[in-house]
Each structure stands twice: as C-alpha cells, then as structure tokens.
Length: 449
Image 1 (cartoon, helix red, strand yellow):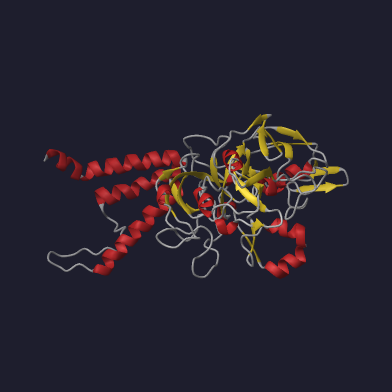
Image 2 (cartoon, one colour):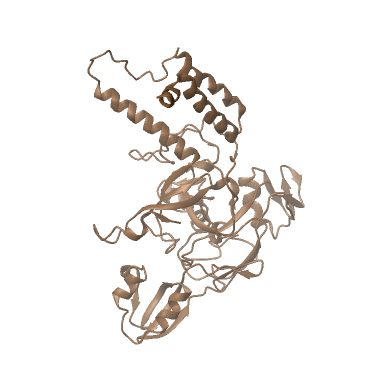
C-alpha cells in the first residue's frame, strides 16, 4: 500500500517527469527548454492552467462523451508518435529494388534515428506524421517560415563503412512535379532546362530535411579512397567484404532451354522481371551474387555465365552526363569508377579547374558558399581560392543491387547533414507481384537488419 501511495503522490510523479524532461533537454542541447519545467510543475503540482483544454471534467455519475474521449486519444497518439518519429524511430517502406536482396521492395522498416543521433528539425512547421507531401492534395506538407541550421543530437555511434543508411536524397532539393522521382539535375543535363520545365514542370524547392528518403549501403566513409574495378569495390586498395545481398547482372547462356521457374523463385527473384533472349540463347541481365554464380554454373542446361561490365563510354541508359562528376576528363562508368577520395571535415584539398567538378556541389550547395569560375581562376565568396577546407564529413553510398541502383555513382557524395538513420528491423514485408496471402513474406517479418 505504501508503494502505491508513493507512486500516486503528485510530488513523486513530478520528480520522475521532471528528471526525464531534464535528460531530454541535456540531450537536445538547448537550455532554454528548461523553462518547460514550469509547465510540468503546473501539470502535477499547482494545476492552475488547463493544458488539456479539450478534456471535460465529469460530475459523478455523468455519462462520458465518446467524441471527446476519441479526441483525447487521437491527440495523445499524435503527440506521442510525433515525438517518437522526431527523436527515436521512423517508419519507412522500401519502394525500389536498389538494395535487393538485402532489403526487398515492399519491406516495411523501422529506421533508428538514435543510432547516429537524430537531426534537430530544420523545418519545424510541418503536418504531423507526413514527410513532405500531403496524402490527399499532393501539396507540400510543410511551411518554410522557420529554417533552423543543421544540428545533430548525440547518438550511440558514428556511421561506419558498410552500414546500411537512410538519408535525404542529395539532389532532392529541386523536384519536378510532373515526375517527382526523377533526378532534376540529371534531366537538365540530358534534356536542357526549357524542355525539362515544359515537360516535367513546375518545380518545387525543398529544404534538406524534406528531401525524399533513400536507403543504400555506405561503401566509403570520410577520408577513404574508393575505386570500383570491373564491378568490385575497393577501399584504400582493399576489396569490400562479400555481403550475400550484393549482386551484379550477368549474361547467362543456356543450351536453348529456360531455367525452371521454381529455381528462380527460390533465389528470391521474380520470373516476370527476367528476359529470356532466344537468340543467345539465355538471359541478358540476370542478377546474381557470387555464390549463386557458382551454383548456376553447375546446372546441366547452363553453358556459360559472364558478368556484365561497363567500360568507357558507359552503356545505355548511362552516359558521361549521368555518371558523377558529369564533366571533365574522368572517363568513369558504374563498373569502373575512381579512384575518388571522400571529403572529410577539416581536410583541405587543392582546387583546380580540373578537379573542381568533384567538389563544386559541396562548396556551393551543401556548405553554402558562392562559387564562381572566371577563366582558370576559382572564386569562393568573391575571393580567389586555390584550396578548400571541408566543413562536414561525406559518404559514398551504393545499392547492393549494383546494376539497378541510382546512387553516389550518379549524384556524388552524401553529406552528414543528410543522414537520417539506419534500418533496425523489418516489421512487415509483402511482394507486390503476388496475391494475398502468398504476397506476405512471413520469414522477413521482425527480421533484424
């Protein structure tokens, strides 16, 4: 009985909530929020203000108003879910096959923001539980009246090489309303500004934290030197570990017969996505990891398997205008790329007209400087610049489905300011090509990523 009396005591409740709130203020890093203790004190001790103004004080025996009870429950759920989404976890669905078969299209994830530390909202005035687009109207879900500078709260760890990372799409600051999934800058390079605006416009400009979310593997972290040789990733000269989900496409030659659909299904692939070319005979773009290559080669109807390797100039649909850094004498492809040094906070690089394409977007967009080139001279904020010191760490992200992934090979570095978190658990998964109940991937539900 004494324990219940202590727990029910208003001073005990105030102490617990005040302690939790103080810990949050310290974590948040803004001591002005200590003033919130006044509200907590009034909620539990003085009770002068009716903060939950929508609640009704019922007299003894009075019938409860179901609508007000529902309103109370909805407001509590909105507040709780908004706080959880802002500081702890966010739900996310895998929309594309760029991480197949590590993460499958149709996987529903909880993304941990506490792993690397949650970002303080840069655009705080926003419709609750919606990222950037209102579900019914299709309009933007936020107002840009207040814009906070980038700041990240403390996390459990920093981003490490080979982590799977959710981040804001770096090129998503400008979005074509006629084709929201398209890369605006790539469209401008390929089709020109007039055609792009006329065909896919109008455009919407979004703040960093309201850009679309992408998920890829961090193959190189700040300070690394990355090189891709014939589809194999090397970091500082060392090959990337062979994760089971990493796959490239191969040309699979058969003796004139197709593969058994059950074999394709057991490999986690969809038969409808594979094209059998009878003139080969075989499959021209068969996604496989290294273990599966050896397994297929042992089958009686397989004649040969050859990895599809892009050499310069890039094969369609790629072109020099789609492979980072889009200009200069780099001659890179998705399978032969680099060597490329990944910028690190505090590091200084010499700047020349030749290497400027690698860093121009960092300097002008991510680190907010005015960049100009006049002849052979580079000007930053009106002054001649022969070098540049980076203000942030950067990362190179790639999808595990190497030939079906729009990633850093196509738009460059990911700034630390764009990092959202890391997937922690798959809470549901469904296959869009199958009907219920076969479309539910039961083995993936509650799978730790």
